[in-house]
Image (tube, rainbow, N blue to C red):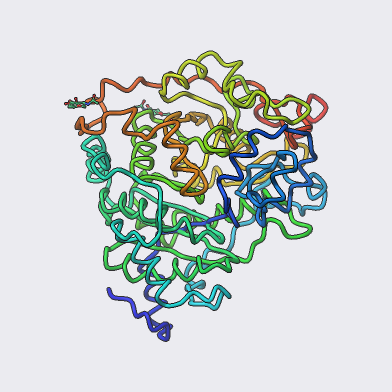
Length: 503
Ligand SMILES: *[C@@H]1O[C@H](CO)[C@@H](O)[C@H](O)[C@H]1NC(C)=O
Ligand SMILES: *[C@@H]1O[C@H](CO)[C@@H](O)[C@H](O)[C@H]1NC(C)=O
């Protein structure tokens, strides 16, 4: 199933789109950090309060790492990724009403078939040679044109993960579904997609699919994502690539609502009745941000997800050279509280005192063992697909009267509603939003293989006597609602319309 790269045969492209449905990657990060040094040096600066809304423009068009950033306060929404900072509160009121049950309206089912990826001029002026360099680097990890986070080969894809291949033998069809939303993130593609493709090769291409939603990039991201089709199809990988003009930072839109739409689009191959039959009974979703990761990060996440019978499994994402946990806005422990205390002055003064008010997480975090939380994302997640497929759940913003937060929080609430609140964090899977930062994080924290012995074979989960099983508990009755870092109060875990006065 060779794919013409001449871009002139629309019939071929239609066939390609039909054949290759599988990779939805939405990459959000805009400029990311050009200078990690600058980020580190901010650590020594005093932290000052600021209005998160001031920072809004930073989030997708950010200047984090620019020299102007050094003298200013460390702001609440200091980087430019999906859902990490509270949005501009004023946009909330303007946002339009939602579809049934407060869910964003999904595109029509024909969506995939109609949107055949096309080459486009994105203004990046990527030379053919550069483009081929990126593509080669993605498939060939020995390619050293682009420096990337090192993932020591001798530790990768050890016998520990054999069980994941065994499971797909018992459950034919596509079992592992990689979903991404990607925007202006070309620098990280060799590492991110390189690792994903390595994992796909390990798990068996016939068991995997990749779905990527790209949008509005002007750095050549789309050209690369378009350009990998031929090679992916040679490897027999199902690949869905689509574009969206949705801009979560456009005027008059609600950012979480738009982000949710993009996330739901990435999942569409799973939920669309036309493509659903390609999947196994119980596919697993790996939803990955624009992070630098090693293959074992993904494998360990999937391993622990299935071993622990979790509904959602999160990594931990770090900034400031691995010093600061990034996803503080959307993460809540089983105490219902933030992972670290965020005081009213919105400083990060307590950011190193993780899980200060939740004894189980406090202990397990330090012992580097999986623990239950109420909500998380942390740069990437593994998710049960069942509630998405049967339409019980989709990514969404809050409904009227419900606490305003990121889509991982509404997801957490919805999982409680349907009795599937088994959310865990793996405190030894560390990710970051650039190669340099990830290198630093892996160095001062650890790689997966420093914590688990990947050479011990596991053919079924019962073989693994080492891993401590999560003792699943009921979700906390209330959690800390935090529309902005300086607006915090407690709300019921499950919002009941009309109960606003109780909050
Ligand atoms: C996993 O959780 C489900 C509840 O959703 C339960 O029915 C099932 O027995 C659990 N499986 C294991 C192996 O614990
Ligand atoms: C990992 O397991 C193997 C096989 O049991 C053992 O030989 C090796 O010493 C272990 N490595 C570590 C670092 O514990």
